Image (tube, rainbow, N blue to C red; front, side):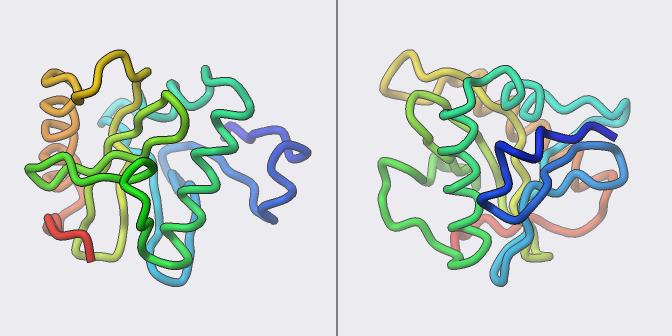
Length: 147
C-alpha cells in the first residue's frame, strides 16, 4: 500500500492511498471518489497526481472533498461536463477526467496538463476506454448525468 505523507493531508483528516483493494480518494456524504486502475493495478491518474506539485495536489483534493460532501461544484472553471458522460476536475492547469457510476461513485480515470482550451481527443477517448474496462470488471452502470 502506498501512503501519502500524512503532514500534507492532515488538514483533510484523511489519509489518501492507492492499492488494488482501496483506491478511494475521498468518501463523502454524496459521493465516493476513486482512482481508476487497470487489471494490472496501474493507475495513470494516480501516477499523474503523484507527479504533480503539492499545491496542485491540494487543489485537486479540495475539489474532490467538495464533490464528495456537497455533490456539486458550481464553478465550470473547476468542474465541467466534457460530453459523452465524461467530466473534468480542473485544479489550476491540471485536468482529471472522470465518470459517475450508479453506485454514487466518481471514478477518476486519467490526468494531464492543460495545453489547449479543449480537452485533447485522445485523453477523452482514454477516459471512455477506462470507463468501459471499469464497468466490465466491477459491474454496474455508469450514470452519464451529473446529479
